[in-house]
Image (tube, rainbow over all chains, first blue to last red; front, side, top):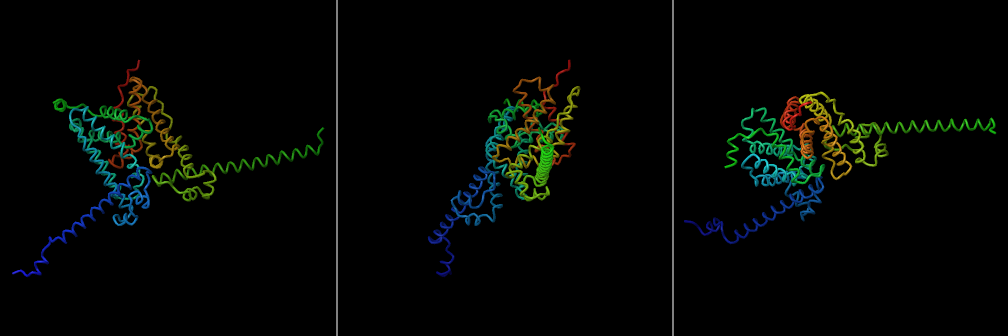
Length: 225
Length: 219
C-alpha cells in the first residue's frame, strides 16, 4: 500500500510544479531570444563595419548587457563561430529554395541566380570572416565547409554534362566554375565594373555555358519533357 | 665696376650656397631612401602577416628607423598602404610578352606562365589589399586599376580571338578571363584542391582555351 506522503512526493504534475516548469520554459525562451538577438546584432555590425564589433557595441545593439553576452558565449570568438554557423544555415536555406531543374539553360540560370543572391547578400560578412579568421581552426573549418558545399552544388547541378567526362577533366571544369562564381568575382563585377545584378548574372551564365561540355542527348530530352 | 673684394665675397657666397644645396640634396636623398625602405618593409611585413596589417613599430623595426620617421613621411598607416600598393603595381603587371606570330596555344601558355608567376609572388599582398580595402576609396581605386591592368594585358594577348566577337561579348569574355585567372583562384587550386603548380596551370590553360572564340585564320 502506498502512503499519503509517498503519493505526494511521487506526484509530478501538480499545479505548483507545472507553474514552475512554465516559468523555466519562459526563462529559457527569453534566454534563447537574447542569444539570437546577440548573434543578429553581431552580424549586423560586422556587415556594416566589416570589423569584429566590440562586446559593448553588440550589447548596445541587442538591447542587453555585456554580461548577458558572456553568460551565453564563453568569449567573442565563440560568438563569432555561432554567428558564422547561423549565417551558413541562412545561406543554405536561400540556396535550397531554388532547386535547379530542367534543361541546361534553365539549370545554369537558376544556379547562377541563387549563387548571385548569396554573393550579393553575404559578401560583406564573407569578407569579414576571411579577414578575421586569424588562426582560428574553427573558422577555417567553416570556410572550407562553405567551399565544399559550393563545389558539391556545382557537381550536382551539372551532373548530366560532367558525368561522362574523364575524372581529371571533370575536376578541371569543376575547379574552373568554382573560381568563376567566387564572392570576389561577383564583387568585382558589381563594385569594380558597376554591372547590375542582371548583367553580372548574364556574364556568369555565358561563362558556365562555354565551360561545360555538351549536354548528352538523353538529358536534353528529359529537360524538354 | 666690381672690386676684387666684392668678387671674393660673391665667390664665398656661391660656394656657401653650393655647400648648403649639396647638404640639402644629401638630406633629401637620405630621406627618400628611408621612405623607400619603409615602403619595402611594409610590403615584406604585409606579405608575411597577410591579411593583417603591420603596426608602425613593426615597420620601423624592419626598416631600421624610428616610428617617428615613418610618420614624418606618411601621415598614417593608410597613406603608407596606398604608397606601397602604388609601388607594387608596377611589379605586379609585367609588360605583355611578344605575341606576333605566336599561335593560340603558345599565347595561352605564355600568358598563364606569367600570370601564375605574379600570383605566386603577390598573393599574400593581394589578399591583404582585398581584405583591408574597407571603405578606402583610394585602395578600392587601386584594386580596380590593378584588375584593369590585367584585363588590358589579356586584351592584348588574345586580340586575334577577341576581335571576332561583338564589343559586349568581348568585354564579357575579358571579365571572365580576369576572374578565372585571379590570385584567389590560383591560391584555391593549390590550397583547397591540392593541385601542383603544373596542374593548376594546366587547368587555367584548358579553361581559357574553352572560353576563347575560335582563332581566325591568318590571311
